[in-house]
Amino acid sequence: MQRFSIMALFMVVILLLSATTAFAQTSKVDVGSGLDLFIDVQGTTVPGKPTVVFDSGSGDDHTVWQTAYVQQQIAQNTLTISYDRAGLGQSDDDANIAKNGVTKATQLHALLQNANIPGPYLFVSHSISGVFARTYAALYPSEVAGIIFVDSTHEDVVQEFGEEFIRGDIEYSGEFTWTDWLTTDQQIRQLNAQDALRNTPITVLSANCHGVCDEQNPGSLIDETKWASLQNKIAALSDDVIHTTVDSGHYIQLNKPQAVISAIHAIVTRINLPEPSREYRYFSLFNLIA
Image 1: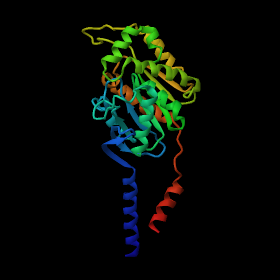
Image 2: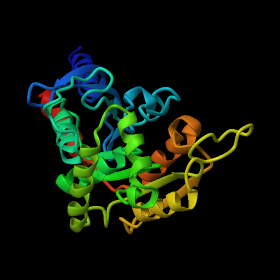
Image 3: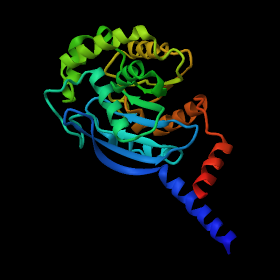
Image 4: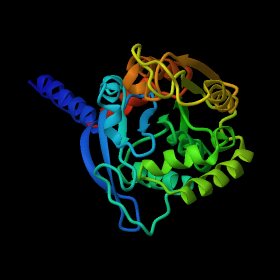
């Protein structure tokens, strides 16, 4: 009878410990200055695996990662989060708070900390959010396990394509002003000196068509050779890099979601995180029972 009670208690403790690592929630989290950001947390913490942080392109909310079930698929194997930047989706906005790269990175840092999301983090960053991920890596290098750049923006985009084209694209999104971009451009160029990603695993997924890219109406709106050269510059930020060109439009996560899912699974195998020892886990468990 006593043995049965101990075993029953043992199973209860296991269930309780499992529950402490399981997350399934949406909420708004205070990131300072009276600003609350919306976060969608899915999955379960897995020892030895990073938390996957999905970040969207300019003007897009977190649902862009859920439309083709990218976040949901990854959440079957590890902890994931997507979120809305200030002024997007269900997040608050404040016109008095700047929307440059450093501000975005510090707000994301506060969101992850205040929501008790464990690191280190694997960022999956589309378009302009690739610049924010690089900013985060420079500001908080110990927290970044890796980055997947999903057809991400490089700061030389203005030099390659001209201010008029890029300015119109940024301001059309309604999230940023041209001044925000100019500040972000200056910030990332200064942070480049830290070479924060040199030994960090990164994957660059580059689209090959930007514009109307279906079989009936093929044709890009930009010089794809120039865009490819910018993608090569992103790939050169690390010595641990895989660079793949995907037959897709700019939204690879919607056009070819499996390419993003596969890239996430692949980079996790390249990220070496220490796992707690089996002996330590059992010791902690029996300490609780005792």
